[in-house]
Length: 428
Image (tube, rainbow, N blue to C red; front, side):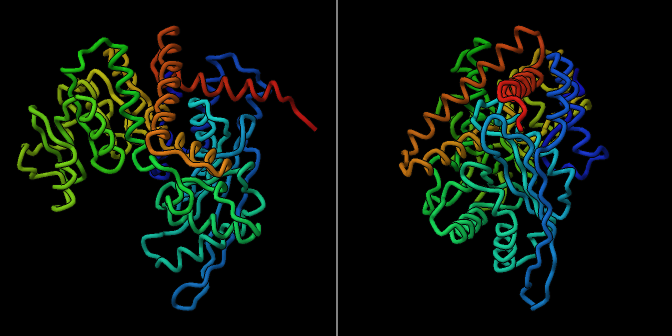
């Protein structure tokens, strides 16, 4: 059963297994658990459309370099395709295929009216100038222009892409369409009809799901302690809301190491220290610890919010947290998942815990279609309700079937997509 828990996002090219083969194996495992119609299984095993484009770009030195770009649209039975675009040297078609399938499940578990897609360009953006990145982005947008649209496929940022990249895509598409179309991408700058609340959305969602788990376990709010691994955008906002809600942040870390203070740490003050010094270490109000030590602290909530595969079979037995809310993609290995489940630790899977980003992208898209925009408070309120509803659904299934939360999330997602396909039928 735990075979379906193999992990899904991150730099999959470092793994030995073909990522798309892994995605299909996961799907097949879930299909057995829910007795999925074999005909629907065959449909879901293959993306609906795969676009490969070779993109000639003039470089700053006057030479022409041809890049390869992809857009894979896995399934749209529940709504328009949704998924990010990554720029990375290791992007391959099989990676993008896998990521597109996983986006189908992520949007489904959140009950968003979307399907799943993913895009990518094989390039090294760290070695490219801003002008080269702009020309590459606009060439890519031109190549896929017929296949993206506010009602067809809505891209977003992913690895090494950002709101500036989204602004260039939106501008290129709008110029070709002859009208302004902000809804063709999400996670845009606020000045170009992006959404309030998008910056904190993922970390906020991580802590909302942790808060709901705290309620389920009947824990005393005044005694809640939190440790966050990583102190980037996701972990900072998770720590911020933990502190705001009266929980005690006792540990945080980054790539250089971690800090610990059992009496509590102010997340805003810590962020100021990191910006001034480049790291959380040597924070004057805490003692330094290692990332490994942080993971094994006796805390209520642990947020692995940095990189993949930090909780493995080697350290899972030493984990003392009552709740793990996965801010990063794939921080827990399948073997570790089994150990944690047997220990009674409640793991909120990444597909649920860090879905605040894609959910707020959905809210941005809705605002773009209406040409009416909500305040940050309104956006976060709507996001919170969706996160709570999704958590309740996954938690209920996990308890009814006596399975871990990750398995429950996949069961819900695949079942929803399969039902949509069944109701729509096959035509023509």
